[in-house]
Length: 228
Image 1 (spheres, helix red, strand yellow):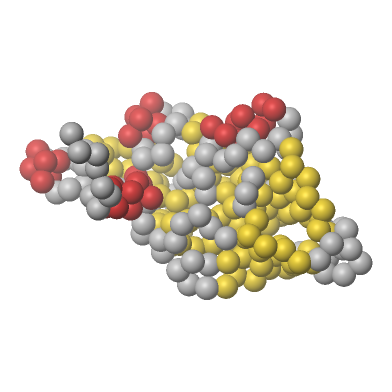
Image 2 (cartoon, rainbow, N blue to C red):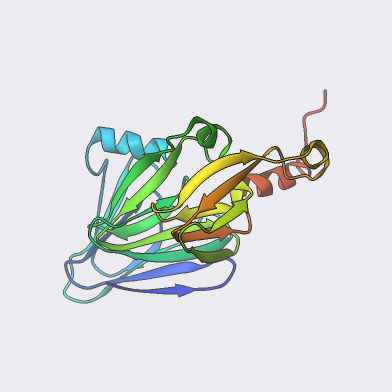
């Protein structure tokens, strides 16, 4: 399997499958394809696995694309919102924790499951709720992140304070907890809200410039409302 990412703001992902190779994605994730591609849609792993993915922001059903022809085939995937496509290569039993609905597509060797936040405060005020996505290797997975993406590598004990909605994904070795903003005037007038996320290394984190909740709130101001 090889891939190419095209574009800047609304990127496309080209997946080139050799004969017999396959990829899977959430239902409706494919944009166009070329070649002798066989599609198979099911709950991938059973009903309980499908329900778990549903809780983590993905569809109950997954579609697998298999190249049944003698030549290389092409499948193209597109993100749901303006942003970046992040390729992640994971080793055996290596995982990455993602925000809800980040999963785009992956090799069949990749396992997609839900990930629970253990701390009550983190789940309630962490920007994405209790359930996140956990992607485990081996293989390639592709994630879609709204906005631009910045990556940081934290050494052991190194901390960053982040608006929770800007955390796109992080390695399991990173500690994630929610802290309150100090100072009444900061809480009331800074526009940053009452809570910040504190992440502590070691490990890598990926931050997004455009949380969808922020975009939705901005667009809502311009949407027509029903007259009373």
